[in-house]
Image (cartoon, rainbow, N blue to C red; front, side, top):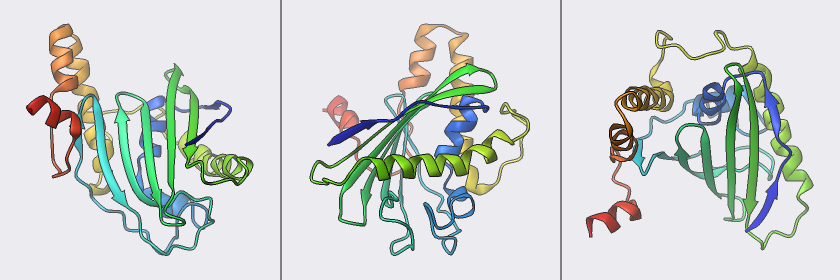
Length: 213
Protein backbone atom coordinates (compact mmCIF):
# COMPACT_ATOMS: atom_id res chain seq x y z
CA UNK A 1 0.00 0.00 0.00
CA UNK A 2 1.06 3.57 -0.65
CA UNK A 3 0.53 5.53 2.58
CA UNK A 4 -0.10 9.27 2.84
CA UNK A 5 -0.30 11.25 6.08
CA UNK A 6 -2.42 14.36 5.64
CA UNK A 7 -2.06 17.52 7.67
CA UNK A 8 -4.15 17.48 10.87
CA UNK A 9 -7.38 19.44 10.73
CA UNK A 10 -9.21 21.21 13.57
CA UNK A 11 -12.98 21.34 13.92
CA UNK A 12 -15.08 23.26 16.42
CA UNK A 13 -16.99 20.09 17.21
CA UNK A 14 -16.77 17.38 19.84
CA UNK A 15 -14.97 14.13 19.05
CA UNK A 16 -18.18 12.05 19.28
CA UNK A 17 -19.88 14.38 16.77
CA UNK A 18 -16.94 13.89 14.38
CA UNK A 19 -17.07 10.12 14.87
CA UNK A 20 -20.78 9.98 14.14
CA UNK A 21 -20.37 12.14 11.05
CA UNK A 22 -17.73 9.79 9.62
CA UNK A 23 -19.95 6.73 10.11
CA UNK A 24 -23.31 8.23 9.13
CA UNK A 25 -24.53 6.66 5.88
CA UNK A 26 -27.64 8.84 5.75
CA UNK A 27 -25.77 12.10 5.19
CA UNK A 28 -23.76 11.00 2.13
CA UNK A 29 -26.38 11.84 -0.50
CA UNK A 30 -27.37 15.16 1.10
CA UNK A 31 -24.07 16.68 2.25
CA UNK A 32 -21.89 15.24 -0.54
CA UNK A 33 -24.10 15.12 -3.67
CA UNK A 34 -21.96 14.58 -6.74
CA UNK A 35 -18.79 14.59 -4.64
CA UNK A 36 -18.89 11.41 -2.62
CA UNK A 37 -22.34 10.09 -3.42
CA UNK A 38 -25.16 10.21 -5.95
CA UNK A 39 -28.21 12.09 -4.55
CA UNK A 40 -30.44 9.54 -6.30
CA UNK A 41 -29.26 6.96 -3.75
CA UNK A 42 -30.55 8.66 -0.64
CA UNK A 43 -31.93 5.64 1.28
CA UNK A 44 -29.19 4.15 3.49
CA UNK A 45 -29.17 0.53 4.66
CA UNK A 46 -29.65 -0.63 8.24
CA UNK A 47 -26.61 -2.85 8.75
CA UNK A 48 -25.77 -5.45 11.43
CA UNK A 49 -23.09 -4.25 13.86
CA UNK A 50 -20.62 -6.40 15.79
CA UNK A 51 -18.52 -5.64 18.84
CA UNK A 52 -15.15 -7.37 18.53
CA UNK A 53 -11.88 -6.67 20.38
CA UNK A 54 -12.91 -3.18 21.46
CA UNK A 55 -14.16 -2.28 17.98
CA UNK A 56 -17.52 -1.62 16.35
CA UNK A 57 -17.46 -3.45 13.02
CA UNK A 58 -19.93 -3.17 10.16
CA UNK A 59 -20.07 -3.38 6.37
CA UNK A 60 -21.89 -1.34 3.72
CA UNK A 61 -21.95 -2.23 0.01
CA UNK A 62 -22.54 1.19 -1.55
CA UNK A 63 -24.73 1.37 -4.67
CA UNK A 64 -22.75 0.64 -7.86
CA UNK A 65 -22.73 2.89 -10.90
CA UNK A 66 -23.04 6.22 -9.10
CA UNK A 67 -22.00 9.39 -10.93
CA UNK A 68 -19.06 10.44 -8.73
CA UNK A 69 -15.38 11.27 -9.41
CA UNK A 70 -12.87 8.43 -9.72
CA UNK A 71 -11.17 9.72 -6.55
CA UNK A 72 -14.32 8.97 -4.57
CA UNK A 73 -13.73 5.82 -2.51
CA UNK A 74 -16.95 4.07 -3.48
CA UNK A 75 -17.34 0.30 -3.18
CA UNK A 76 -17.51 -2.21 -0.36
CA UNK A 77 -17.11 -0.29 2.93
CA UNK A 78 -15.67 -2.25 5.87
CA UNK A 79 -15.49 -0.30 9.12
CA UNK A 80 -13.33 -1.25 12.12
CA UNK A 81 -13.92 1.48 14.72
CA UNK A 82 -11.74 1.24 17.81
CA UNK A 83 -13.40 2.86 20.79
CA UNK A 84 -13.79 5.68 21.37
CA UNK A 85 -12.67 7.92 18.46
CA UNK A 86 -10.72 5.88 15.87
CA UNK A 87 -12.13 4.76 12.50
CA UNK A 88 -10.49 2.45 9.97
CA UNK A 89 -12.50 2.38 6.76
CA UNK A 90 -11.32 -0.09 4.13
CA UNK A 91 -12.95 0.40 0.72
CA UNK A 92 -12.71 -2.18 -2.04
CA UNK A 93 -13.39 0.28 -4.83
CA UNK A 94 -15.67 -0.54 -7.74
CA UNK A 95 -13.39 1.53 -10.02
CA UNK A 96 -10.36 -0.62 -10.76
CA UNK A 97 -11.17 -3.07 -7.94
CA UNK A 98 -8.48 -1.37 -5.83
CA UNK A 99 -8.22 -1.20 -2.06
CA UNK A 100 -8.40 2.28 -0.49
CA UNK A 101 -8.12 2.75 3.28
CA UNK A 102 -8.99 5.80 5.38
CA UNK A 103 -7.74 5.87 8.99
CA UNK A 104 -9.10 8.78 11.01
CA UNK A 105 -8.47 9.58 14.69
CA UNK A 106 -10.27 12.42 16.44
CA UNK A 107 -8.46 13.81 19.47
CA UNK A 108 -10.52 15.98 21.86
CA UNK A 109 -8.85 19.33 22.50
CA UNK A 110 -11.73 20.14 24.83
CA UNK A 111 -15.43 19.33 25.00
CA UNK A 112 -16.19 21.42 21.91
CA UNK A 113 -13.05 21.28 19.77
CA UNK A 114 -11.30 18.39 18.04
CA UNK A 115 -7.94 17.88 16.38
CA UNK A 116 -8.27 15.22 13.68
CA UNK A 117 -5.60 13.06 12.09
CA UNK A 118 -6.01 11.28 8.75
CA UNK A 119 -3.87 8.64 7.10
CA UNK A 120 -5.01 7.13 3.83
CA UNK A 121 -3.54 4.31 1.81
CA UNK A 122 -4.08 2.78 -1.59
CA UNK A 123 -2.55 -0.08 -3.53
CA UNK A 124 0.96 0.60 -4.81
CA UNK A 125 -0.10 -0.39 -8.31
CA UNK A 126 -1.76 3.03 -8.51
CA UNK A 127 1.00 5.33 -9.74
CA UNK A 128 -1.12 8.46 -9.89
CA UNK A 129 -0.22 11.53 -7.85
CA UNK A 130 -1.20 11.81 -4.20
CA UNK A 131 -2.40 15.39 -4.63
CA UNK A 132 -5.81 14.70 -6.25
CA UNK A 133 -6.63 12.30 -3.41
CA UNK A 134 -5.54 14.81 -0.76
CA UNK A 135 -7.58 17.52 -2.46
CA UNK A 136 -10.59 15.21 -2.62
CA UNK A 137 -10.39 14.42 1.10
CA UNK A 138 -10.11 18.14 1.85
CA UNK A 139 -13.19 18.83 -0.30
CA UNK A 140 -15.26 16.20 1.52
CA UNK A 141 -14.17 17.59 4.90
CA UNK A 142 -15.00 21.13 3.76
CA UNK A 143 -18.54 19.96 2.97
CA UNK A 144 -18.88 18.22 6.34
CA UNK A 145 -17.32 20.83 8.60
CA UNK A 146 -19.97 23.60 8.55
CA UNK A 147 -22.73 21.04 9.04
CA UNK A 148 -21.08 19.39 12.04
CA UNK A 149 -19.89 22.65 13.60
CA UNK A 150 -23.42 24.06 13.43
CA UNK A 151 -24.97 21.11 15.28
CA UNK A 152 -26.59 22.05 18.56
CA UNK A 153 -26.04 21.22 21.30
CA UNK A 154 -22.32 20.80 20.65
CA UNK A 155 -22.11 17.84 22.98
CA UNK A 156 -24.16 14.67 22.67
CA UNK A 157 -26.98 14.23 25.18
CA UNK A 158 -29.05 11.17 26.07
CA UNK A 159 -32.37 12.86 25.28
CA UNK A 160 -31.61 13.54 21.60
CA UNK A 161 -34.22 12.17 19.23
CA UNK A 162 -32.93 9.34 17.03
CA UNK A 163 -34.45 7.62 14.00
CA UNK A 164 -33.90 4.16 12.55
CA UNK A 165 -31.10 5.29 10.23
CA UNK A 166 -29.16 6.42 13.32
CA UNK A 167 -28.57 2.80 14.30
CA UNK A 168 -24.77 3.06 14.19
CA UNK A 169 -24.78 6.20 16.35
CA UNK A 170 -27.26 4.61 18.75
CA UNK A 171 -25.06 1.53 19.17
CA UNK A 172 -21.99 3.74 19.57
CA UNK A 173 -23.60 5.89 22.27
CA UNK A 174 -24.92 2.79 24.05
CA UNK A 175 -21.45 1.27 24.23
CA UNK A 176 -19.85 4.55 25.35
CA UNK A 177 -22.35 4.69 28.22
CA UNK A 178 -21.64 1.06 29.15
CA UNK A 179 -17.91 1.78 29.21
CA UNK A 180 -18.42 4.85 31.38
CA UNK A 181 -20.46 2.84 33.88
CA UNK A 182 -17.98 -0.05 33.84
CA UNK A 183 -15.04 2.30 34.38
CA UNK A 184 -16.57 3.40 37.67
CA UNK A 185 -16.58 -0.25 38.78
CA UNK A 186 -12.89 -0.84 38.12
CA UNK A 187 -10.45 -2.29 35.61
CA UNK A 188 -11.93 -5.79 35.43
CA UNK A 189 -15.44 -4.49 34.74
CA UNK A 190 -14.13 -2.06 32.13
CA UNK A 191 -12.14 -4.73 30.28
CA UNK A 192 -15.18 -7.01 30.28
CA UNK A 193 -17.39 -4.25 28.85
CA UNK A 194 -14.77 -3.41 26.22
CA UNK A 195 -13.73 -6.89 25.11
CA UNK A 196 -16.83 -9.09 25.42
CA UNK A 197 -18.03 -9.88 21.85
CA UNK A 198 -21.55 -8.87 20.84
CA UNK A 199 -22.48 -10.17 17.39
CA UNK A 200 -25.39 -9.28 15.12
CA UNK A 201 -23.96 -10.40 11.78
CA UNK A 202 -22.86 -13.78 10.43
CA UNK A 203 -19.45 -12.44 9.41
CA UNK A 204 -16.37 -14.39 10.44
CA UNK A 205 -13.95 -12.62 12.78
CA UNK A 206 -10.56 -14.42 12.78
CA UNK A 207 -9.67 -13.20 16.29
CA UNK A 208 -12.75 -14.90 17.75
CA UNK A 209 -12.07 -18.11 15.84
CA UNK A 210 -8.52 -18.19 17.23
CA UNK A 211 -9.86 -17.85 20.78
CA UNK A 212 -12.51 -20.52 20.19
CA UNK A 213 -9.89 -22.89 18.75
